[in-house]
Image (cartoon, rainbow, N blue to C red; front, side, top):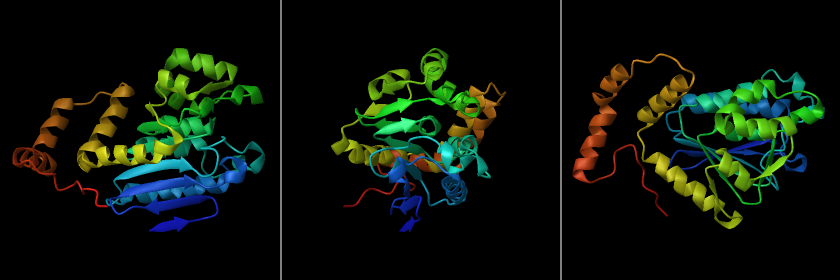
Length: 253
């Protein structure tokens, strides 16, 4: 099933893998107000829909995302780039960014908000806001979590480009794949995520966010509740019986 628009294309696969494609290739998929609204509505649907298991974010044409379209009225959007990235960061489903070409500004923020980032070796990155006369203040928490303070100082304060290998060394990108193999690498990684119990993934993502923020969490209580639940019982049973758990749908060609 596909739900196309002029700016965003959402394709739902049979196994619950949703592909969200930024679809403004003539502008390098630079974000405008309408795109942000569409992304906000899509994230709300994904959160509510239990059939959605993995969300893949990518860009149409030559680039992933050339940033925010400063001249295209993005300041008039009812939702900000930071709010959309926060929606992706908090989404209770695994998220994968597949990056090629330019990944600039808001594009880097999207990558930083996803759970896994795959990129082509020719992809390039930049956090150029200081060159426009302002710091990327609202996006800096995302950048900081993904790059760490030392790397972020280097790239945020200069605003220049860095290549995919540097992004991988910084921790923003998890793996590099040639253009010809990027799609298959995304499918393989999505399949790995599908083998994880949906409820356990949602709880783990929440815990990771809480612990990173220094929140006090009763981990013993969370663990005790989880191991007594239906998913844990099914997971242990499937392991003992040497079969797939019920939440995993094997790929069928």
